[in-house]
Image: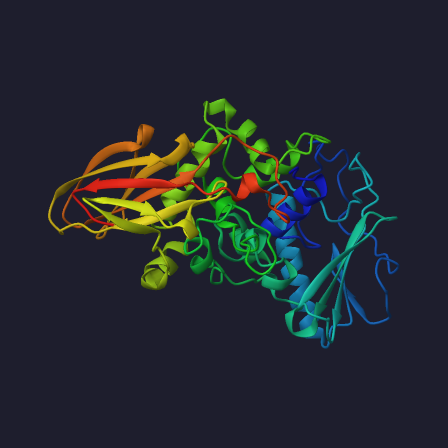
Length: 413
């Protein structure tokens, strides 16, 4: 199935956060042609308008139940603008998506604080005539970045990352806890990397992949601080490609592939070693409650992946291994039934220092010495050739699971 352009936009906006604050750079990759004014022009006709409002330089908040609520919301939005637009170079929320020249006019984004919304804490609208967004957010969530920024990569980066530390400080915003959901990300790691299936998908939880790309702990050339912005800018307009196709071009300079990046991401997720300031702390607190029961024993040191947990397109199995506690050599061999493509890695962590290392298993086979005081996991990712897919309506190619057997010595699964 094709991964439609509309689905691509919706998927990325849900995965990284979509708000009146940061809006990604235009797909053309153009840079703003004119410097914006210090204060944007208000437009009460974007959204329902009203007589009760408060302004900041780039935003207007309507209908807040108190001046304090309006001030808190404006400070949050301005901090986000300072981080994502001023510091990271994202396209301004003041520009219409109908304007490819990025030369204005510059308009304040409107946020409407409302008493209630059917079935949602907040919702984003856009005016197709103006090409500008406006938000409706329930009163109690008006200054909550987890709602106003859709609670995904943008919100988490805003709340936790050093990338936004200066902006948070400038506008008096706290550094707060991560919203990572490891029960879903690791517990259901076998799902398609981004699965938007209603009621069972992971598309609101899959953002740690973008955090990994941004932190780039494996130093892939072409990745780093600006990766998410570049996924938008480098998208081949009209191509109908998926973000993974765009990613493959970003890492081509390092002779890497999207499959290698995905494989290493999942290897690092064995201990949530993805360059996030606090996510690993959450993992260490919750790890005993995360479902990693991916294999069934077959005898003679061999296991087979459970039929219901076979990794789907760019998904993975994370398998913590048990050793005797003394120094040992762990040997692992992964065999994929039908010759399907996969990426296998042994992830090793020192439980005292927290240091990690990753041992690739070329052709599914390899070994590593595991010292006393180290723990080890086997990670197997389903990394076939890239496909076009619609995350909201997965086809059989995306849903096809990797059926494999694993033979291990020196440890047990």
